[in-house]
Amino acid sequence: MSKTTALVLAAGKGTRMRSRLAKVLHPLCGRPMVGWVLTACADAGLDPVVVVGHQADAVREALGGVPTVLQSEQRGTGHAVQCAVSALPREGTLVVLAGDTPRLRGETLSALVARHEETGARCTVLTMPCSPEDAYGRIVRDADGGVLRIVEAANATPEELAITEANSGTYAFDAAWLIDEVLPTLKPHPPKDELYLTDAIEAAAGQLEALRHPDAGELMGVNDRQALHEAECALQERINADWRQAGVSIRGPAYIDAEVELAEDVTLHPGVVLRGATRIASGCVVYSYSVLESAVLEQDARVGPFARLREGTVVGRDARIGNFVETKKAILGEGVKAGHLSYLGDAEIGADTNIGAGTITCNYDGYAKHKTSIGERAFIGSNTALVAPVSVGDDTLVGAGSTITQSVPDDALAIGRGRQKVFEGRATDMKKKLKERSGK
Ligand code: UD1
Ligand code: CA
Image (cartoon, rainbow, N blue to C red; front, side, top):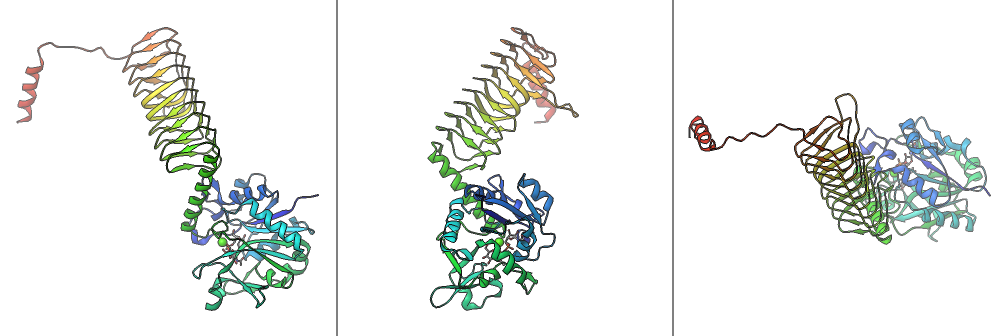
């Protein structure tokens, strides 16, 4: 049996976001808004088709390979579905939902489809509780509780605005009925002459079901930045709660992107930020205010506080990255220690090597990036500048304050700095001169 299709409406500009970026591309926990909706579709086993329009190319790119149809002019949710007809199946159930409901869960979609197919209705609309100030369409029922129609907030009377049940914008339709009998009949509404999909609901009266969902938060539509923020906070809570269930200690606020992967017995201290495709193995501890961007930590590594690990960083087993250390494309072997104040970029560092405080890989010459490689069990003295391309061998010792511009062979001692001069008995004399010069 073929899968049920879900048509995701994502062509709108989202004017109230006041943004250069199309609304459905705004990220929540590192995933674009429409990506959350597609994840819910996938969780429910639905096959998505996305209606794109505003910034269509950018939206298509963010969707990867998901099939799309173009609504070149955005003339309302009903018009968006009309534009998609050629890409839709003409039998069975068709789910239609909006690209701006990022908190919607797959299980809720599954329940909607199940109810729709159980009753054999022409349309089943998912509804939610609302308050008078909400901008959602209101569900108008008759005296017996049957759903009659949906009235948009902008067109509603004060009595209708007082209705406490709203349209979530998520529906299951009898595909043939919607496509053949309803879409061709939609009429434009003032003030913008849009075609409302909600009119299809009225057309189904008598064979119309409503599934009440108690959690309005999960079904919220994001139309402005405040709602975006509220949705992101809620999704972050969901992500963190799921990781706690999976054996991760999250000891305070933590910002964890949707694509991050954490193993059991990872501990995150307050204020940790984990972005992109960060992967953390078991036993690792990330201390406060560390930011990891697509970084990999192997077992029992410890990072921070105040560390910044950028993309392409791999921290080996039992390795230790301390405060104010920045890494980028840096592969650090097992047991490496970089405790303080370093920049390690385009670097490969062998097992058990110690990187002294203030060590910098000078990877950029103003035109190109160059690589630094350091062997195993090396000891790099504090405040060393490694001018790449350069390599430092196994078991080496580099004196503090060195500027290393030539490769250092295995087991060598390398010192590259000015020699210290000492002038005995000259301090008092010098201080006197300096004082006179200052006029104090
Ligand atoms: C819509 C519903 C409203 C419901 C609310 C739930 C209609 C007329 N109204 O209102 O009853 O309570 O969702 O959140 O459907 N879109 C297109 N093409 C268009 C217009 C919109 O693809 O021409 C897309 C948008 O990108 C968006 C979705 O459809 O993802 C919903 O559009 P939006 O303008 O946000 O509708 P609401 O006013 O929120
Ligand atoms: Ca909306």
